[in-house]
Length: 325
Length: 240
Image 1 (cartoon, rainbow over the protein chains, first blue to last red):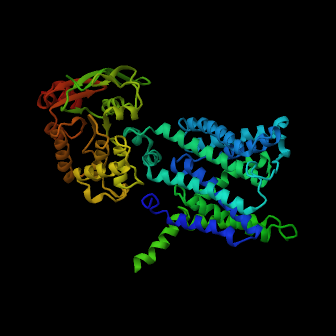
Image 2: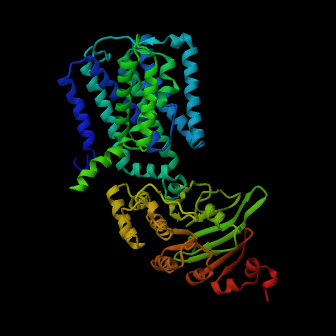
Image 3: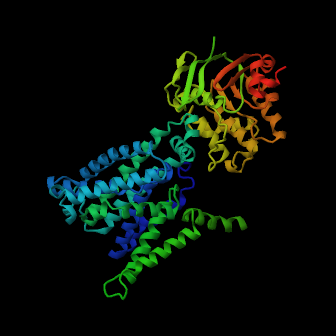
């Protein structure tokens, strides 16, 4: 156990603090922020499984998120199915899509793969917004709220904190597995040089496809829980390129290919966005939308001073005093 | 009884014939050198044996098992490892991790793979570089790293593409000695080499290629004196 958690104590500490928050804080705004930080962190970590660990940078992950979200919304409203079932259905659909996109990654590399994933999410965006009879089109769908565990309806935000925290820890552990297991080493080799990895007996193609499929399934689970929490799904949000970029951005600012990075990145971006919107973005503020300028500047500064993401920078800070003593 | 058999292998790239009906066999424990001027099809032949290219005709088999048509990772798992002419270390990984990737093809246990990798790095003379980043190594050290990585997959036949190419003069004897040791320990090797002095010193047998065809196959001193080989390298005028 100690061996398994070696080097993971910062994550243990952060998740531990997150677990304590609901005991100490009752403020709904703060709990809401914490839930979103954990949820976007989990989604960015799911993206990181493909984009970071397998080196398959996708800007179409909103497809998987949207499949999860629409599973909850459609199964709930049309057939009165439990969100827990919807969660599995969404994950299964996303896995199938993940395999499809994964096979694409064996044909297309680098920027061409990225473009293909964007195109894929556009197809879903169009389908979601035009297939009115099934998806209600661009009006979106309100996800029914029915109190209870089986129906995933919780008034108490503290329950949501623990639910999303469990998800976040789960995705973190998947990443930890990818750092330390045989498959993790092999995937790192594929990311570094696919041909060299093949020459050493690594089944590169199968591993890439598997990583993308797992990433897709977990992203869909995040989508289902998000839809259940927020209570509303519309195609222009859940299938947007913006959303895909958000996943990637959180992972990149936090530290791509690191287990904790996506969570730190998501925390930074979500807090920054929420704070800036609250201060500069409200109706009545002189300059509506100016928060986006601050937001952009902040991101540029992060990329300027922490081009590898936050994790390496924080790691250096931590070690410096230790080395001096 | 041959271990590796190449029979009638032909490979075309558009109008260019890179390999034309090349056939030979390699016995267990043999060290066979492959020579030939630039563009004679040596590297193409290696790509075909290791499964990276599929031949247009002919086939390669290892111990009677047909390899042609299999993916490179399958070919490796069946017992053929290779190094690359243009070195391809996993630059962002440590030297140890590089070799572990090879070892993990034969064991599922990460700890066991780490031990194996350490032993192999010691053997190729990189014991003090275990934790260094692969990108910090010199060319000679990278050659040793590629060798260790390939050995970690426990090959039955090892293909070496230009062991001494691009390496400074002082590092060459050490690398040559390493190849000799591997051979002495019973490994079967197929070695592409430009440096004639090196190849005639280590190989028991040399195959010469020219313009995609096999033009000679035999003992080193016989092959290097062969009229067609000399002509291939220097042109007809130089042959007395």
